[in-house]
Image 1 (cartoon, rainbow, N blue to C red):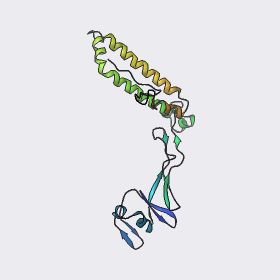
Image 2: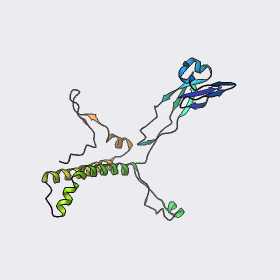
Image 3: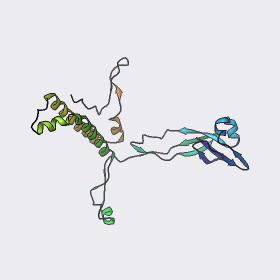
Image 4: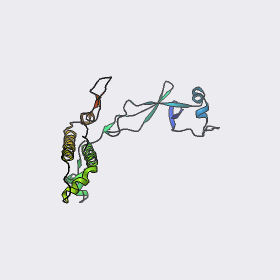
Length: 205
């Protein structure tokens, strides 16, 4: 990424090489790859330095657009303070319902991260159970009984899914939710064992 600096201010940003006209001079796109940094800077083109200090995981936060600043011969692209997404569902208010009768007060206007994460957990649990669902259907229709090992492991998946959803619901803030998914080595450097507080689903077998 490059920026055009005019009168000590960034006036244009180039995300990829392109032909450009500066004053009475026209320049082909390949100057971005063929010219040295000093040659580009001589006509006001600076390679942008990215500052990701404030950039946060987009799954959990809404980041600002980049802003571009020129100082001490360097153009820096940086982010403002990120805004955490809502953990809990947003509900319609009485004012919302007054404006639109379909927006019934107390019903969900937008789902929060906790709801979305629990949906993922339940989907993963369903995926774990799906390969043996046919055994349950067969047994229900009067066929061969489901092996006890399968019944036990299927129950373990459902139990684990409930535990995971409870842990998500109990997350007090964004950091607590994020921490549930962070893996750490609970083994040794020679024999690492990576686990996360949320845990994993048992295998159905």
